[in-house]
Length: 586
Ligand SMILES: *[C@@H]1O[C@H](CO)[C@@H](O)[C@H](O)[C@H]1NC(C)=O
Image 1 (cartoon, protein in one colour):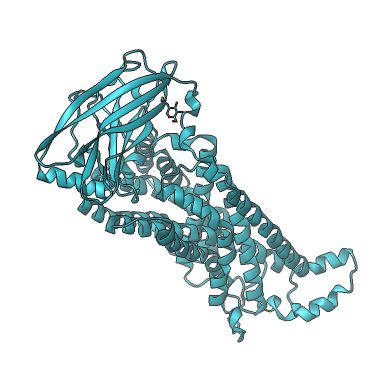
Image 2 (tube, rainbow, N blue to C red; image 1 turned 60 degrees about the vertical axis):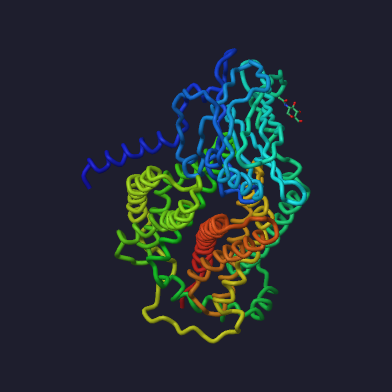
């Protein structure tokens, strides 16, 4: 490996890091002197019920104010991916300068323009603007009761609250209802009122949060409920562990009466019989270790992003959540390489380069594939979600120049540091035949049932997360999310341990895939839940929004499934190692 390649990678890494961090220009300082220009950015317009179906504001035949000069504006990668399309409104607003109702432009309403507005009003279009990074929403127009006449709101009444030299509050009132009649002129007007406000600059986003929604009794109750489940499961698993490790304990405290119970439960005929097979490599080790590596990476990404979100209020900046997630994903690639590579080496795999490529690109390919497919529809719709070409190139560069090299580092470390198969039991040369067993002990059944409890522990949280993504709530209770992640991991590990224990007791040694899949089946339940959510909790419609919803829900569920699977497998593999360490081979 030449050193020049590393330099290139390092340079690319710096470039990427630079482009992900928000650029600190004048506009980002959020302080103003009197009469300094305050920019009103028009963002997007779109149907109220389809949050992700957004178009440029000026794709509707609105007119812009006369002011044209505007300083350059930087976009972060997260913004570009989320379809933020800021365009200058052309309105003349100066800090602490009142503006009486002023006409800023006129729309020559011909037939085509009228139809465009009528279509927008029928579909409940609303638009979004930004002042000093504070979002403002307004509705395009209104239809009368019988749906024949359509009216446009033409007067934007802005009330801006300031505290010292900072903007802390913005209210928009839409007035001036004008009936849409072809071949008329419609005057668009605005006014600006400045008010002193006591809101602190740090707290200015608080009014967008909805504590009565997120800190509802249901939310607390569900956390409490899951907590009870955790206690029960941990108790169950410790009981199993106690029983299997009984001999060690019995040596210290001579408890003879336990023997009867064990004979009834058939300890000696169960899992101990398969000691020569449990550490046999799984089938398809290449795919398996890639999945485990990716799952470990997703887990670390979730953990880090949630911690960052708790520490910093990421919701106050457009697209910063996504940028952070991409950055953390790239930076945690060694985790993927380490766990995937070491597991593959332990299972005796030889094509480690192939494994590394598959492991590194599994998740990016899944996400980019979905994004690419949805992009086609977005382009067809002329939606602002269509990902610009430059952004695609940037994402590909991150994959090849950051993720891949970091993954390589992780793989090499993993293979060398923990790539030796050091199992407590020898693997027999000839695989033991798997005896017939009851239908509910079949791996397929265990896999299906395994996901129910993990899903049960998260589905209330899923409702809150979905609502903040697909409807207009800002998710801010990341402490809850952290708690739920921890609970999910504990439940998943416990459930897979119990499943594996039953499987091994039925003298079936194919526990690796079973433990992974029984945890990963959580994803199937989450995806099924997303169907319920779509039909009963949202009013989305249209090809674009529907495919966006189901496409990204599939990506989300799969990622969640891979994460649960990896967590479950890791926990189970520690359990299996533990119980077989004490087996005397005779
Ligand atoms: C905006 O509206 C809210 C609620 O009606 C009000 O409390 C606040 O003072 C208003 N802010 C400004 C700047 O007018």
